[in-house]
Image 1 (tube, one colour):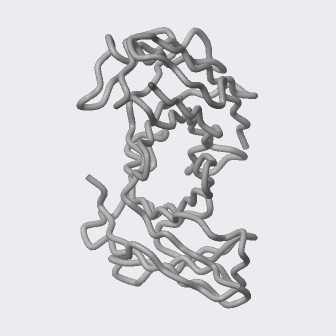
Image 2 (cartoon, each protein chain N blue to C red):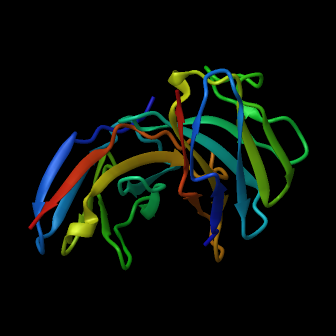
Length: 118
Length: 111
């Protein structure tokens, strides 16, 4: 199973600033995703991080606000730009891995990065 | 939108079986049923998944009805550490896309 490390695990940020979250995977993976979990809510997919090309964003999320990089098959970053208190959330990196074979796989998650914007 | 409906919350006594239901009446023939759980302040954790047949692993059992319109996740001997939000997700197995998380069921295991 894939092991995912996220940094920072938590941060407190000032309104108007930007923060970059890093996601490192211990193996090469094809698909990486970024999710947001607002306080007391379920998970919402922000975008799919594509290696070597632009990320694919879900409805309601735009590249200017959430730029994503995916320089290789084991690493990705998500930047939360020009933050406001409404951006206070847990941001989660996830990867798709088929594990030992077969025709199905699993989605693995990092522990998340908890952002508080003042 | 999530294609599943789950009860908002459930309680279970420690040591007893926890049976978590999920309705997915519009499931397609090529869609799998996945279960994840999220313990407070942690990332979601995979539990089990299945297509048609019942499945069992070291964590849980998944019972899927013959018409595939509903399923039940069974934790055979719930412990306090099983207190979490449990998510039932149906999706086509296509490299991780289409994982839509609904509100889930908040399971409280009581001593």
